[in-house]
Amino acid sequence: MIVVKVGGSAGIDYDAVCADLAARVQAGERFVLVHGGSGETNRIAEALGHPPRFVTSPSGYTSRFTDRQTLEIFEMVYCGKMNKGIVERLQRHGVNAVGLSGLDGRIFEGRHKDSVRAVENGKVKVLRGDHTGTVERVNTHLIELLLDSGYLPVLTPPAASYEGVAINVDGDRAAAALATALHADALLLLSNVPGLLRAYPDERSLIPRIPAHDVEAYLEFAQDRMKKKVLGAAEAVAGGVRRVIFGDARAGQPISAALAGQGTVVE
Ligand SMILES: Nc1ncnc2c1ncn2[C@@H]1O[C@H](COP(=O)(O)OP(=O)(O)OP(=O)(O)O)[C@@H](O)[C@H]1O
Image (cartoon, rainbow, N blue to C red; front, side):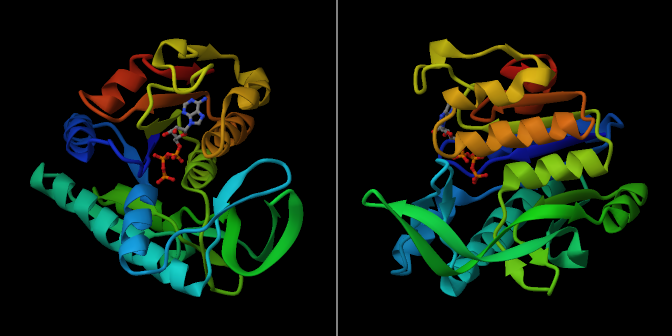
């Protein structure tokens, strides 16, 4: 079983990802796909007159401040346009994909964090009305039912809070929790970069290997949103996933290339 998370940044080639995935599914491999949608969400939020707001925590992590209106735009894009676009591509390749959010069947569950500490103009502020959280529990029953019946699950945030409220969660860390819960052999985190770069954005500075016991030491190379990927990788290996690969989803056969060892391999 392999969990693939494909991001939502500009430049990702979903046709390439879906064609590669379909061929491998048809050859008999088991996959679950998780996806993001940040680039398109930013674009649509701007167009709807409710531009995105990113906040940076005192420890340096960047996240989307998700008020109710942002959550609804987020759902339109992630669960609607992005999810159905991927399901449609897979269906065209003859794979019976089923698109679900973490809310559906409570696949992804976690605590709702209503307030966030953010550094703005050098000062720490507490912002309320945030619909975010972190996946703490993965309910795999529905996914296993689908897999056992020959469907390919295509999952996306948001998650469900314990009270049943939709919460925006990081897709990379959700995929890491999923890979752990499913005892996956590998977790692929595919995005619009060749892997983890030592000197971002210089693509020649790709870090090819990271020892599994030392992932957190590599957080220093990751800026802003890449930090969550490195954290997700650390969580997955701590959860028993033997291999995590940061791979390139911009062209070619992104899944096969990552499984062949291209990108940054954590093991
Ligand atoms: N050291 C680094 N190596 C590689 N990329 C980095 C590094 N530091 C920061 N980045 C940035 O991290 C980005 C990838 O993270 P991001 O969360 O934007 O992608 P995603 O997974 O495609 O999106 P989504 O949130 O929609 O799932 C890259 O596009 C790059 O700009």
